[in-house]
Image (cartoon, rainbow, N blue to C red; front, top):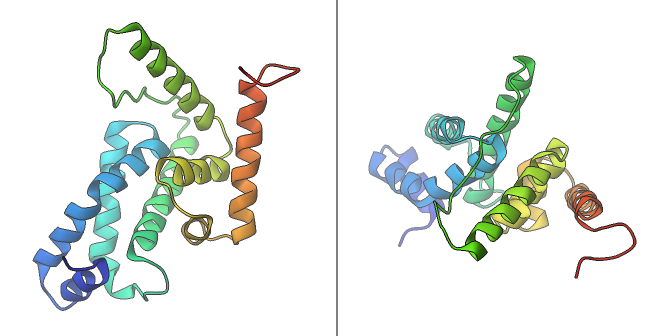
Amino acid sequence: MKSDIELLQEFNKGKFEAFDQLVLRHQRDIYFLTLRLAGNEMEAEDLAQKTFIQVFINGHKFKGKSQFKTWLFRIAVNLCKNHLRSRSRKNEFGMEEIDPAGESTSLSSLIAKEKAKELSDLVNKLPTKQRFTVILRIYHELSYRDISRIMSCSLGTAKANFHQAVKKLKAVIEPPGGKLE
């Protein structure tokens, strides 16, 4: 199997099927990243598509200083930041519910879904940089180094954003005077 870099090089030489392979390889990750950042399915689909359009247009600009996936995530994150800025200027408030697990009727499943929804709502209330950092770290299991590249910040800032986000989440989740059992 060819690496992302090899596929991008082939695409830059005019082999469009190499681009198709890159899209197929990364479309799921990019969709779920944009879904978590934007908060609704229609916007996520648009943002994921715009991400790959940017790769199609600017693939020749990839310098290889980071992994292709890091570069791709950075494009998606920047598009999401711009979209959220634009959306807030239009005063469009509210996030649609995300229910990736589908419907279930068991009590334990319902409780788990409710807890996941509550956590998702809390993450969505974090400041943008902290929210993006948590999503990249937890949901996409990226290293702090990759997060710093994607977010265009220092390694220390990426760690600090994550630490502050976790601190804020714990303050809301844990009852006063002790940890949850």
